[in-house]
Image 1 (cartoon, helix red, strand yellow):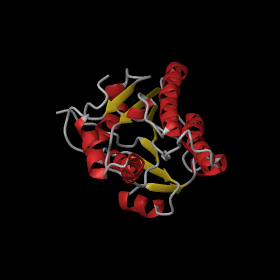
Image 2: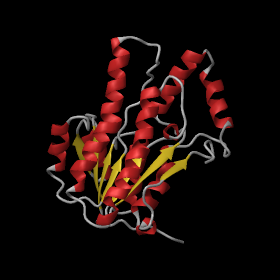
Image 3: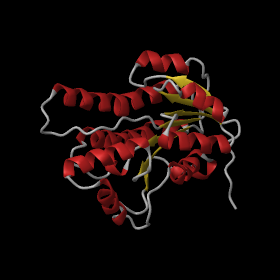
Length: 252
């Protein structure tokens, strides 16, 4: 049996207070990582204490917030860019609120991810790992979610660029594309899709599950293995890739 030991590896996980990020924090803790979790969430301190981690309350779309928490982390071995913001942005909605939501999604998911990675880079040496959370919607389209879909396509594009840029320094960059996972955000999106489509949430969810090769809705802990693998020495020769963990919903 192959096990992964990340003991002493300083790991920063953004969006680490709930959902996929919390599942990742538990997995990296269990692998022995020296863990820092970041979230724009007043509960981050309490969550971090429960994990034996260091918590940082920060909005990754704000440069000053990034510099503030990075100042206390002199070295980083593994950066997990997991923070993200998901809302509907219908193209036909001409409201100022819809435009503001679109800009916020891009600010957090794209610009924020770029700025965190840029700040982490000066603290990384050969053997460093950058792992970013994209989505199966980073490979396909989804109506009403154009900003989120665009942001997740951007994560894959940035990952490919970073792999080429950082390869000479011995740093890898990869992305994970989760399918539907039972989180607060995904269930919120399901409710809004149901409202727009006129279908009951249970029917809409069943339609989603029917598109998977493997049955059932994933839990956050179900997708952590891909991240642990990419963080480990087992993935020393893997870079510029995006891996779907989606129970076969997007079979390519």
